[in-house]
Structure formats: structure tokens, C-alpha cells
Image (cartoon, rainbow, N blue to C red):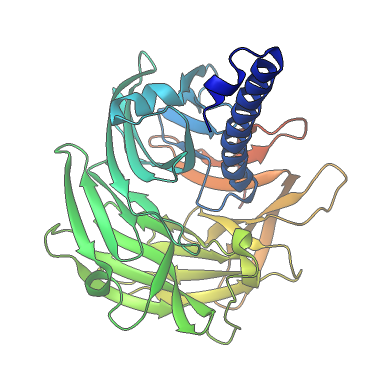
Length: 408
């Protein structure tokens, strides 16, 4: 039908036509707003990883609802400096058709130089395209120097796109469903590995979390397919000292003597967590669906990790293990995300000491609206710092606090 011929001479026709335009614009607005709201709803689950990353010189917290990064230099000093960086500044060099992006996770190397800090993240645009994004930030000016990016395959419902970066920022790796890619940050080149060759030749895996160590060991936490809708958490260990020839060292079942998971039931709590203390070669793994953490050690670099102790929370359904931090050779902190012990608290951070293979002693408890942990050992200082991501009680923004764990 030709609307122009029918209504151009009619006041009623013009009014109807304008109303049609109004409803079309309203429909477009609601569709775009609905998509943004759908993406933002993911934030309360923290599905893909931590919302902040920190090294000795800089901390970065992302805020999806405000589309900006909060950057803090000298975060452990008495006079930190803070600036904000809009997402648009980061993604404008990626040739995207629009500026809006949703950040899922962010990591940084713990051994940075004093001039620039490197942060890697997983980003998603409105068209549900996923990207690996690396931003290099000048420490003195707190300004963006440049960015690198690679487009990723859209993840499956069960995938978390685990992200790991080398402590010295040599490269960053992300595990997808069929392949693992590693981006050399200095050369801006990419190595791609088939997951069946690198991680598991006999079963499908869904990656959850990853850590890269100084000696190029990759520790991957993943759910391994057992049978219909049933999975078991595994720790995979590989060596990437030769980028062209990675070597798988071990595949360890972490749920021995415990029930397997039906991941479709509680996706937001199925995420696994891991922390490695490189000086002592100790590892702590969190399995929140089982309210359990597993302590492992690496006796020799060329050998697989060994399970030392399994710590199961006495309280069921607290999602004990949602985030973990290995503080030294026998001290670790664990986030129990749903343990409202006080009127002003919704979660709890518990610090414990592994005395021997049979005894665990709790040494510290902190209550608040915690959603993530990050441990950082400051070089040339004796202070032990635990950075904690915290949900505001008054609005939807997040923040981080720095706590000092004291123990003897």
C-alpha cells in the first residue's frame, strides 16, 4: 500500500503516519534497551570472571552499567590516584559499528614494569560478538596507549571463556570450546591450538578458569563431559614454554567421592575458581556448587599437581569457593558468596591455615557484600594484601577494598 498517496492530503492520514513512526521508534528503542538490559543482567551473576584486576602499580575495575573503567594508580599507597576511562576510548580502534560493549572478565600480569600496565579482557558487543581485548595503559598519565583485539567464537551456554595472562605480560590465552588461542602481546601475533590435542582427546570440556605462571605452566579448570547433562570438574596442567609445541602434563578429577554437577540448574554458581602461589607451588581450587575447595601442590615442575587436602564447608548452599586466593604455602582465603550472617552482610571471606593433611584452622573472617577475591604479593614489602571486590549496598556499582590478612 502506498501510504504517501493515500494520506498526504489528509490531516488524519498525516497523524496516523506520524503515530506509526513513533511506534516504530519506540519499538526499536525497547529492543535495544532490552538487549542492553539482557547483557547487564549477567553482571549480578559474575558468570565469566572477576570484575577487577590489580598489579603492583595499577588497579582496574570495570562498570558495565556506566560503560567505563575506574583506573587507580599506586593502589597500595597512601596517596592513590584515580581516573575513569570510557569504554568507547578502548573499542574505537576495533572498528566496531557502535561503541557499546559489555565486559565479562579482566586479568593483568602480576609482574609489570613501572611505565605501562597491561590488562586483558573478554568483551561482547550488542550483536553478541565476543572479543579478546588487550589494553596498554600509561602509568604516569593514566591514559590509554594502544589496544589489541581478536574476535572470538560466540560461547556456548556452558562456556566461560577462561582467560589467563603471563605474569610479565608476554602473552594472554583464552580457551574456547574447540580451540585455545594465545596472543603474543609484544608481537601482536596469534597461536591457535586444537583443544583435543592440547587438553583432552577423549571428552568434551567446558573451560571455567585459567592461570598462567611465570614458568609458562597453564592451569585450566574445566567441566569434563561424563554423560547426559552431567559433568565433573577437572584440573588440566600444560606447559607452554615452547609456543609452537605445548605439552599436556596432567588431567586431575577434582570431584572424587563427590557427586557430579548438572550445570543447567545453577549456571550462575557453576563457575570454578583457582589461585596459584608460585613461590611455594601451592594451588587452591574452588568448587562452589559443592561448597568445597581443593588444595594441591606441585612437587616437581615436570610432574602433575598432587591433591593435598579437600576442605568442605560445614554450611551447605553457601557457594563456598566462588572465589579463592592462595596467600602462601599453607594459608588461603575463600569467598562464601551466600552466607548472610549479619544484617549488613550477604557473603563472607574466610581465611584458613592448612596445618597438615588432616587439620585446617580458620584464622580470619570478614563479612560484607563481597563478590570476588584477588591476592597480590607486593615485592620488597612484607605486607600481605588481599584485594576484595565488593557490591555497593546503595547502587549497582562495584568497588574494591584492600585487606591485610594477619596470622601467625
